[in-house]
Amino acid sequence: NPAAGGLVPDAIASLGDIKQLACANAQAFTALRATRQVVAWGNATYGAEVPGEIQSLTDVVSVVANSNAFAALRASGHIVAWPAKNAGGLVPDAIAGRDDFVQLAGSSGAFAALCKDGTVMAWGEAASGGDVTAITDQLVRVRAIYDNRHGFTAVTADANVVTWGNPLGGGDSSGAQDRLKGQVSYYASTGSS
Image 1 (spheres, rainbow, N blue to C red):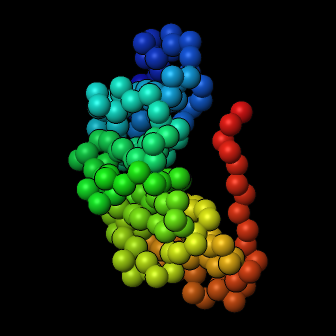
Image 2 (spheres, helix red, strand yellow; image 1 turned 90 degrees about the horizontal axis):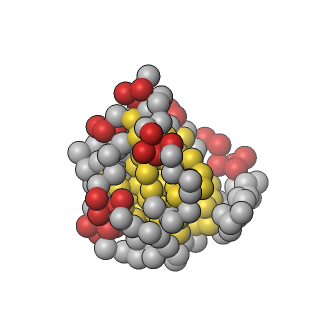
């Protein structure tokens, strides 16, 4: 379906510096250029039209998606997202003003971001993991975050597993903590190729 990104526009297909297909959501795709700029195509409502202020950035290191929006991590440690009217596409001021993020993840309707100090912030639909208020005290010394459609998982330095989001989709791991504690590790990569 060309309207949902099934056809790469000529303007993007002709670019000779596409480094990687970054990610996709329900109806749009993104790619990173060698210039560390992001391009997108598909349905504009889902983020295929990258706002000018984001399109001009030359320090994008990664892009993640939820079902309806995209978020990008910049080399500066800042986060940007689009389109603003979709779940998670508007980064709250308390998050947008920070410059210490090192990893992003996206569920179906929310985003989570790992800070250099090992804490995690989230935004978007609470039912999809966009609210960490109830577990902020557990989200310390986090080394990595992961996502699924329904929520997020964080692995801490002392091998604790913290989950949040839709309880039926993995957002509540309380019944499995005895089997998870000390049994889960994470894989770290520099992301360079």
